[in-house]
Length: 210
Ligand SMILES: [Zn+2]
Image 1 (cartoon, protein in one colour):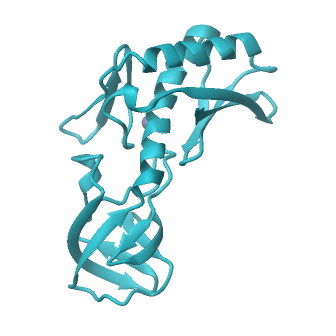
Image 2: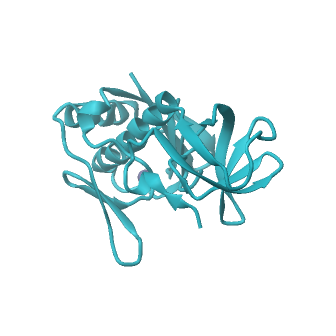
């Protein structure tokens, strides 16, 4: 089992750890700050001893760092990991923003079931069951409500219960989430929203940073 350092410190950018397994370009570490794709959040990229990690994801429950090349280091070596922070920080901002956006979305439209979501460094995409187009005025109001909330500098906290379930809280918003987040909404700045229609009876809300 790889220890996930980001569960304790979401802002950790560099770390030193031991290599526990290498299978071609797939590397496992004793501990890691590289977020592995899960819960819709994109996996991290970065470097291990200066060698490029192109993505991180779970394969058969193992926390796998996918290298660009077969690595020069060996099992048992200590390596320095550096995550691509600009990319991850954008993901953290967008992930936090999307939870708050959804709170105001439901306030403005009423509850709509979310059928899927994903976030990378460019945007958060959230799909909701909805007949017809999302009303443009209500969507604009959702954007304005979200931005008015973000600028107030609300704290974001995450707590973990005995079963390891993580609860995300910010002001009146609360949900289960295992992703990485900013500590304060002020870090996010402003967002903008866009709607798309990915299929019949489903509307997508895309959140991006302004
Ligand atoms: Zn989340």
